[in-house]
Image (cartoon, rainbow, N blue to C red):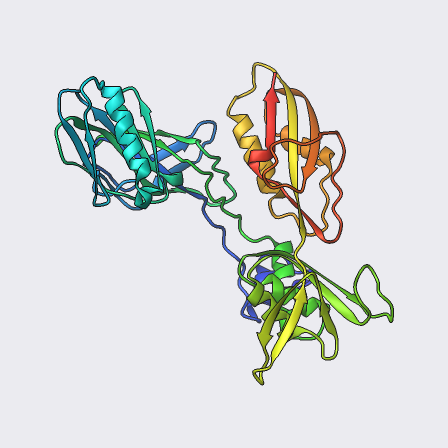
Length: 414
């Protein structure tokens, strides 16, 4: 059996795949963009350790980070007094000058500076909040760096925040929920705090034998053209394509909405142009493409060819979980459980349903839970914040894809 790619395992399967130039995908490391807050003009050295409460895996940064007002993603600025006539700062080269009114307090000066920043169109990516005499300025989602210089008396920099990437020290699927990377193993060099505003990218384990066999099969199918398997395989390799379904109708009458002697590719993700080009290159001669959208491509004779395909209807899934806990329950389990559920369902395929009973296996992985009730709901509105919930499965049609995101997962422990 070790000579057969269908039955071979481990190193024998690796040797079989190597004959085609296919290598098993290595394990990857989870990583996250963290926000490090420090005193102005501090330096975060390389290989500092950070942890997530309840996890044994540590995270380290591979690059040092200079944290100062010349380039940052957030800054806390204090108004130090109300005795000056003018309060001036410069953000990204734009001068913000507030002229103090006679009765202005430090809080009112801070609010005046906030209003001036918000009125600047070129500073629209900055979010400003005021707490007493403290002005907090940060870029939207902490993604864009900016500079801030004090140009007059009356201000003092409290602390600065900048971004650095932290990597798990071991490979594999280690979830990093938002706002979980909070503990340095040691704080020094003026470093005050760490946080991750967004969830990290979860790593992957070493490619399994099953996944390697499937990938080998798909790569072999790419060598052929004109078959459903080759079209599906090609579309699956396109950038940002998440899942693909291809159906054909070989009869002389319309079947499942597909016209006679045609096929429909339903593609979740990816660019329209790349999808249309792949379908044109791989479709059978004389067989029409069908779908709810189209894109025009040029064939080898520079003739415009209209290619049809479909996008799936997106069904946004709501998950409510009520937990009865005991003294062994760890509160951080709720955050980790949400990330775990999202990870298990984020790559759900077209037409694949969600059975609420299957989620109990994830819930009861966490200690301290004596009972749990799970309800599911659905909506086609991506902005919906609630919907009707019930202990029932969500069944998807062949042209639907279920979208699971943490923001629609609610877990209540009592």
